[in-house]
Amino acid sequence: MGAKARLLTQRGGRPAVATVLELQFPIGRDLRDLQHGAGTGGFDVRLGGVGELSRGRWSFVASTAFTRVGTPPFPDRRIEWRGDALTVTDEPLILPHRVDLGVGARRVLGRSLAAVGEITTVFDVGHRTRIVDRARPVDVLGGLQFRSKRFRVTAALRDHMHALQSMEVRPSPLAGLVDVTAVSDVDLTRYLYGQGLADAVPMLRLGTHRLLVPAPDGPPLPAGSRVIPATYRIRSEHQVGFLLLWAMTF
Image (cartoon, rainbow, N blue to C red; front, side, top):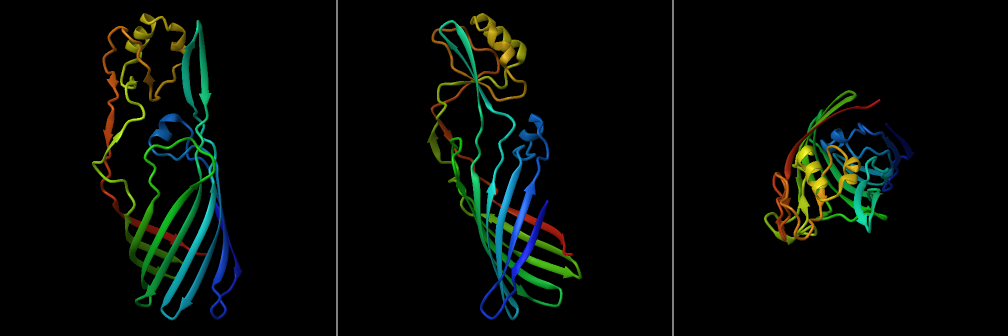
């Protein structure tokens, strides 16, 4: 949900200015939905401003906004043995807030048709959980916009031009740990019982990614385990996408 209010109209070389307030509610908070792209599961608030200057057939736009990102519903869980006691610690996942910047231009080609272009980027701000391989996005968009009374349709190509270098090899921060995500619950339970870690079984959460610190000279790992190697390779492909936007003004 959002609202935009005009603060200033264009006068000479002074652009028109508006402010924007948006509230983004969680689409879903179920773990499976979040793993399949239903957002962060948190409540976000976005406050921004837009400036527009028109010159003949040209219109130029600049925008900026700050988004306060809410807390996701699922923390990371760490299960440890300290001495003879089992310790379970839930560590909240702290996402960074965002500052968006963008500039764009529109060129009228006909009564209902215009060419549009835009460059946008996002900066992470504030305290956050450490992110591996964070790449600040720089997106370039170009396309056509069709207008008919209150309706607008924009078709464009968007190129993500600040992607990580594909096929680059980097050291793994999790080297030596064992990924047991693909291990069946029965086999993982049997393995933990064999290690004397039966008390940890009720603390496991279904559907989550699981990493295990292997015990030295321990029993064979259960089927489906994967020891994380010392390095990994970046896969960064298909950075150009097609965008189709339908809008209505009122």
